[in-house]
Image 1 (spheres, rainbow, N blue to C red):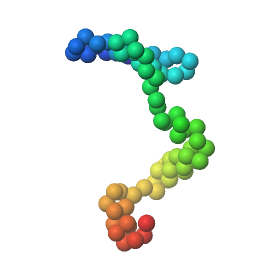
Image 2 (image 1 turned 180 degrees about the vertical axis):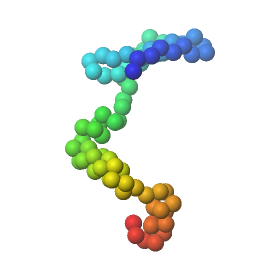
Image 3 (image 1 turned 30 degrees about the horizontal axis):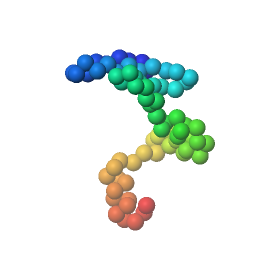
Image 4 (image 1 turned 135 degrees about the horizontal axis):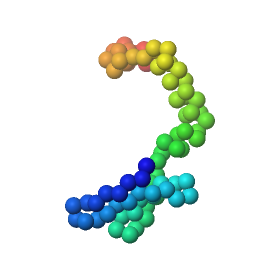
Length: 77
């Protein structure tokens, strides 16, 4: 996502992509935007856990926060 913002002090912040990475430029200085989601998606074990969770959600295997808290109190988890 590319954007340009102007702060109250007149500082301009611009985002852009370069070499498949995202950067922002603030007052002439360039900063790479670190996105940990890319690291998570590239880890096969985490990717497998995410896919299993998505499958559970589609099958309706979900619990409310209250249900989870009660299960923890009962020592089930």
